[in-house]
Amino acid sequence: MSKPNDFPVIDADAHVLETERTWDYLEPSEKKYRPQLYSTPGNPREYWVIDGKICGFRFPTLGERELKRMTEQRGRNVETPRDASEMRDVELRLKHMDELGLDIQVLHNTLWIEQVSQRPEIEAALCRSWNQWLGDIWRQSKGRLRWSCVVPAMLMDESVEQMTIAKQNGAVAVCLRPLDEERRQLADPYYYPLYEAAVKLDMAIAVHIANGNRDYCDLYRFSPASAVPMFRVPTVVSCFTYLMSELPQLFPKLRWGFIEASAEWIPWIYREVEIRYRAAGKEFSKDLFHENNVFVTCQTNDDIPYILNFSGENSLVIGTDYGHTDSASELDAITEFNRLEGISPIVKERILFHNPKALYAL
Image (cartoon, rainbow, N blue to C red; front, side, top):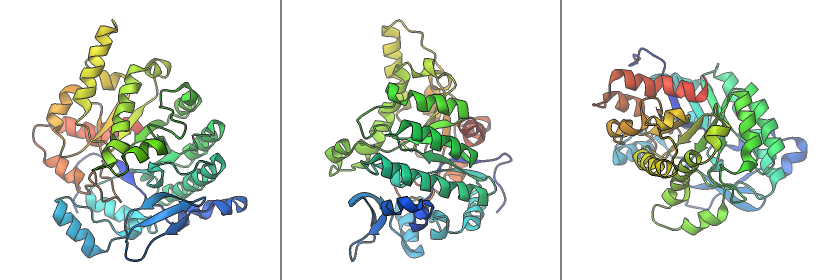
């Protein structure tokens, strides 16, 4: 396949699906914490059981025929080879990236979308194993597969230590949830040591749609389209909270990526911040997001020409959500984005290359 762009293309939101092999890096004393897969007859969905509790699901293992049918139904390509999604075959993943016109993917986790464990020592062990697994994947990829590390937020010293090791092994960001196990938001001073470490290590904060607060998740778990209030809305609110907080002044070099919540909310947050800044007598910049080091993943079904009026050209990135089959997944996102009208070639190059390069310091 001929490369459609004459510059490198960075997929700012791709995934890796955890497998049994993910936990092979547990220390001998931690083997007792090893997650187990659970399923019921006739149900393609599998669940991870950790410390006797169901703590997350695996995306269904679908065959080629099922993936093709899903692609046709949704009008978006979600056909990923299983061995590539699960990183059983890194070379196959790289070959598929070549076919999709992708030079680099930044990988995010699948399991940590909700609370993994109420016991800090268990989460610390699982984070350590996951991060070592991704470090091995990075080495096999010859640098084309970068990643955001997971950290046990209930143990701040341990989180900083794992960040430092992850940085040495290809990590470019720290993946945090908008709400944590203790109902803390990301503007809480509790997180300041982690932010200081991220600045020192030149790592971004990746706020990927998720929610570590089980009570909040249970409140919406059985609502229609539950993923929106459970995961997407808290991600958007965390961006608003960040912009209204003292964090931009305290950590002016820290970069923030708000991942997989689309970008249609940007005009709303822009207006809300403007109103409150002016009411408080604070100076408001029209380049709000760029000046505060905020990056947001857009989707090809967003009204990107309109959004650019508020985001500016330096704050949008785009991803494929590779490996997942939900509403944000679109393997052909780069091809479809290149076809969009109303966006100049210069701005397209910024969204596909320069902006994600800046976000992840690649």
